[in-house]
Amino acid sequence: MSGRIRTRRIGQSALSSLNAPSSSNHWRPCASTSTPSIVPTTTSRHLSLNPFKKDPAAPSPKQLQNPVLVEALKTRQARLARKDNVPRPEIQYGKLAGTSIFDPLREIRGYKDDMTPEQRDAVKARDEARQKRKAIEKEMSISALRLDPEPLGRKTLERELVIKGIRRRGRLTKDQYLKRTERQLTFTSQQLPTSTKKLTKLMNMIAGKTVEEALVQLRFSKKKVARDVLKGLLVAQDTAVVSRGMGLNGLRERKKLIEGPEMVEAAEASLSQDGEVEITTDKDNIAGVQKADTQEKKPWADETDPEKKEALEKQEKAREAAKLALLYPDGTRKLPKTGEPTTILLKDGSRKQIHDSSEIYVDQAWVGKSTTLKSWEPRARGRMNRLLHRTSKFSVLLKEEKTRIRISEELQKKKDNRKVWVALPDRPVTSQRQYCLW
Image (tube, rainbow, N blue to C red; front, side, top):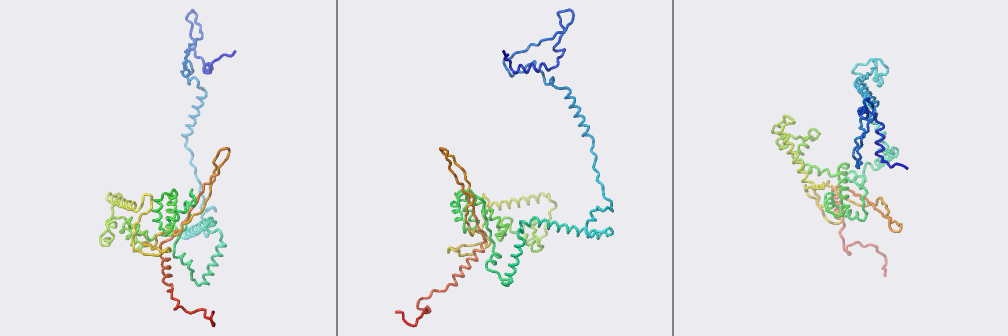
């Protein structure tokens, strides 16, 4: 038979057997006899029905500690403390002698020991310039794979272009002249989770409109993909301004509305005089540039002047208010029309007024298919349906309004050069024959 003893009781018995017996707790002299004798004492245990209640006879953590291990740890900590307090020796570097052959100055081309200090400085300057040229050549060689992947083909093309220019005596074709005088940008968006059929409707809506008008139409469109098209059109507009320099004529008027006409005129005046743009923020320039020549400018005493700080804060708040007045909540620009309007004739026969010849408009907008993702839908009886998730992308061709002005002038010139229709009796007689045909 096997005794049914709880595991907790067995563990407690094992722990009690490991503890060292203490004479004061477990042994006492016998009082019933005249001769003192030592007998072991038995402690009564409290049997409880609660298994989570702490047993008073269980050994404490201090009784389970290993004194040898504790002493070893103390010794190790003391040794580490003494080691940390010892200062580390400092590393002393040696120096080369003045006549050493390993002196870096001797590696410079053209250096000699009997040179004067001026000659040494000149040789060092030439060596530094040589090192800079080497660094530039190394950088060009590293980036040549991307910037000039086919140098032989590039040289051949340049030779052919030079020969064509000599044959035409420097005259440009119409396409070359337009590419040099007019700016354009082709932008292609990322993959959009929609079909080409849905995206075509939006492209037809924004084609032919200016970027500002297209952004307004996309803001109020109910189609879900219109938000992605709006973001892509904003990126295309910013890319055209930065990379192609399109729409910069209207920046002056926009800057006047944000910073004030006085600040812009002061910047242009400093640009024409010194060749550098220098926009000052002192009190006289903010009040009016016209009085700057007659009145003496009041210099500010210190950068921490409270009066100057207050004036700058007011100016910054005014600029922020002007920016908010020129922007819609989603970031699209709301600009008032300035300048003399120019009426042009479009290809469809309608007329349009243009206030800024550098304003960007969407000349063409088209859609293309992109990656088609596939997924599976489980169905009954172990069958699967294949789902197609189509993606598409759109492309826009941005141009400036000066292009439409040129096209309008060409259409008007072609219309004016048409010959007037002449009635039949006044026409010259053609196809005359010697005999009658009846």
